[in-house]
Length: 517
Image 1 (cartoon, helix red, strand yellow):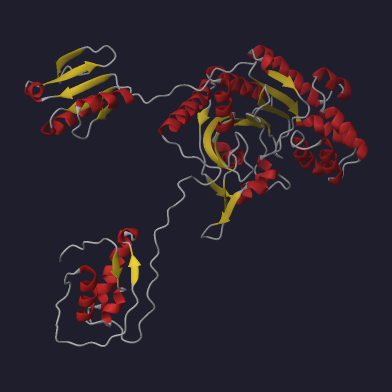
Image 2 (image 1 turned 180 degrees about the horizontal axis):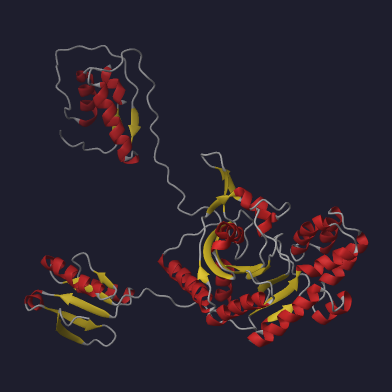
């Protein structure tokens, strides 16, 4: 069949072939393209109504659409087609261009971003392992019930949740701690305490986005299960300080605000406020920095707190001195005792200059029961860098036996923003040890053999897969920061040798394959 000269065709719907004689199709195409597609009988006279035509650019049709049209055409011309009125012609739609941006609040990781992510995650993992923690992970998809057991939490309204095909309510995990609790219950007595586990996992929250806050992020968690003493919290804060030091941050750049949920409990207990209001009050207080003080008072009053209790509570929450807190609550309370012990341990660990007392820190999640802490940048330009605390009663909310536990979550987005702010982002260029190139097309197999030898010795190799001029090869070597250029040429290869060029010094020599390392 001759090629169609004009790519923009007038295309008949394939089903019309049942009802149009070949001579009509021939006349139609001859009138537009001046060539014959079908046998043509000049003597036949046809009185056929003018068919409806479509102006279609074949480049707008996918290969699957074109194949379907061809299949339909061959099937209908095979004599087994159904007779009767013409079916309505199919609507031919142009392929719509997709939005090349990822969904709002999510990210792509091209190579340069992936190198940064790998660097960050490597530091997360190396610090965890320095402290004797073991790595774990959980499904990204969990039961929705895992996250809605505590009423009033902001996290309930931020879930990416849906019903799966088995009519089960599931959610993309918004954080890692509930999954950890589930796993600890599942393992039961098969594991010996204490557990020191860490994870780096992807989390999802449908929330308002700000700088350093996305709907999809990665989170580093470290948790200690089975230790009731404050030494566990002190160890966790020490691990984060170690991480900050590794990436170039100092105590003048970042710090930790530390308090205890028990401070709030003791104040509320003085005013006979019911225990069931405690979680709701924590959530309101956690938003204090984001909303006006009058709005905070209004929300506390709506929660059932008396005006006298509200004023006393806000007065306590404004305290930034542990000594002042001790004057108000007394030295015998558990909250003051725990905090004094933590600050004493901070001196022994060597990070006392990194932490400060701030009674307003309560953390928004309902499951915290004791000491809580948040990492922050001292210039106050970003939201909390990380946060955590003690959650001794979380397991019982899932039907397990309560075990003393504490941990923290550390997101990947805020810390990257802070490193940008401080000019501390590392230069992470692609680095390849060798680039191997054949100087002749017939030597491509030989070059592949050289690359294989080096790779089996643990060296990275960028093999040039096409015939390229040496100028291109040198540019490629510079782009991938190759240390050596290995050229496979005819004369050298016949002697069982290759030419090696050290790119940093320009030194060049020939070497046998056995000597190649």
